[in-house]
Length: 220
Image 1 (spheres, helix red, strand yellow):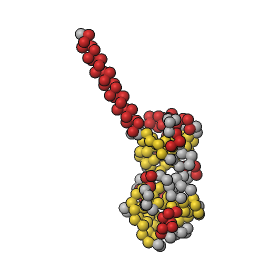
Image 2: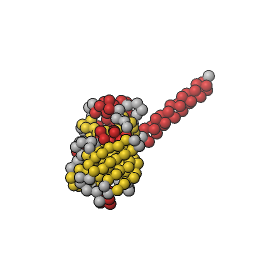
Image 3: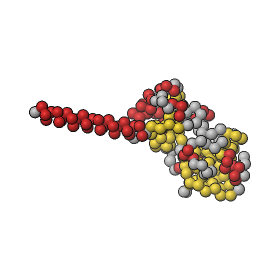
């Protein structure tokens, strides 16, 4: 009898260990570090509804949040010609959470205004005041270039694709949905990064992938 109990106990301990390994492995694989923009501390990646974004913003650790989406394969028509395979990013409204700084002109203030990265502007001789038509499938957005910005450091942008930044309403029009695929967060206190991430993990289903600013490596 004692031998049977020992065997059963061994199976239980093994099952618990395996379960813990799977949970920890899954959590570790969902945690990454990268150079986030400006004052950003944490980025959650998934698919979020406006209600979920509001719930994230209501967490006591969050000072500010920005909803963002990256669209690939956008076609852009300008007076200078056709640009295929452009990448469109959401232009954050909060200065500290913006992916790139304006080199000339101004930041977009409406859905009819767009920011272009300086490399693309120089390569295609696109200047301030240029009118553009951005299309993705059947969706079309017309916008005027009001600013030229440094190229975003985000690796998701890619090394060569033309990059345009549009306000969230215009991005949603191109995407065909009101939801977003990432939430960038500035924390009230950076030491609360782990607490915030756990709260967001418990709040959302399915749990998001968590990306921390590189400066938090070794602290979370």
